[in-house]
Image (cartoon, rainbow over all chains, first blue to last red; front, side, top):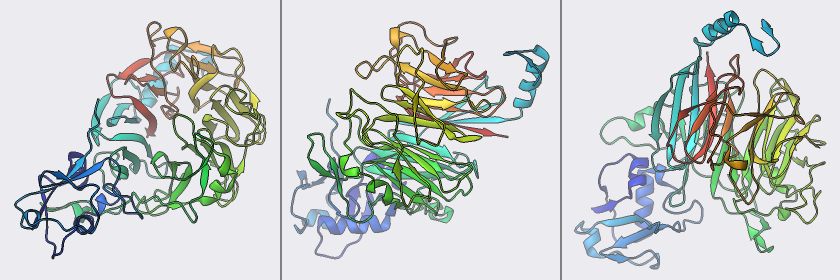
Length: 98
Length: 409
């Protein structure tokens, strides 16, 4: 079971409180998590990655076990801590700064 | 008409107020940090405010369907998370991404299943001019404006940045581009500092095949075949400080156009500089800036009961986006342009440095006509008497992007 933490505005859009849990079969990559997330919550399509190209939107970040995986290759496998739910998969809106 | 000149007799005034009080006015306000809905009866004295709806999101535009006033479309957007279309079928009490059914939302695990945000350019994406003059591929950024059909609640048009027009016929669930617009010399369109978006869509109430659009730094266009083919309607426009060829066919920074439903061939335009009118559906434009203190500005609108009475809000210049002399003045022409009078009663007449954006003015259809506008300072003003007097009906909101008004009988 994978625990996904969405940013505030996407939780509101999907109308969920707290974490979202997803069941995925191994091997698990970031695109696989996003495919499953968007299948379960179609309203999120186009908000984390673009329609068509499926490229990550510029101001969205993926944090995995306290590391920024946003620029990691799409076929990189997620660690066991994410797969067994010990650590959450964080989808984060980049800081606006200022 | 029971009036003497422009002065209404008290008895008739009371009669008008009495008739108006049976109506409800709903003002849809899009702001930088959410949407607000203001309601009052037709006397337009006491206002209730609901919101923020979609708190924290940029709400570019909300507009109700003339065919079903409880159907409201909203453009919800974010630099982080992109474009969402929302729809209400109960006058703004509840909202869903179109395509979700009420059953989708029921129960503890209910959530919206509608996607509704897929805006994909038709065919080859193509290129327009970039800021440095090189070709640049079209990139969808957001929806600036939604224009519901005059007759079908499920049909609406959406104006996009980068400039394009999309159409839905299923209530906003799916959108298809009317790509003929981008066949009109679009390789020469070039964004200004504010982006290159379709911000005005006017539907001709007497000709279902005729649509007008205006594009920032793109110009003004018309279709007479329902959106298949388009042509520029810019003859008479002059932009000597914005374009190397002042009379170019495309590229003019049109800020807003407006029409009155009873005379849809008469168009009014607030351009970057200049206020203009056309009496032949845009085939020829004539400047009517007249005695305005500045002919730079953003919105322009037409009185619902007087097709030759129009309103603008002069702004100092393209370098100084605030009212001349720090005085917030709406200017009214009762001659279709050329002769203008300042409307100031109830508006701040010193130290006011707000702007009024292009989609932030609207009118109701009561007698007397109500005029409404929102400011970048977060005020929404209403005049219940054709512009003669004004009062703030909301204050301290985020920057107001858009104002639309529904007159509910």
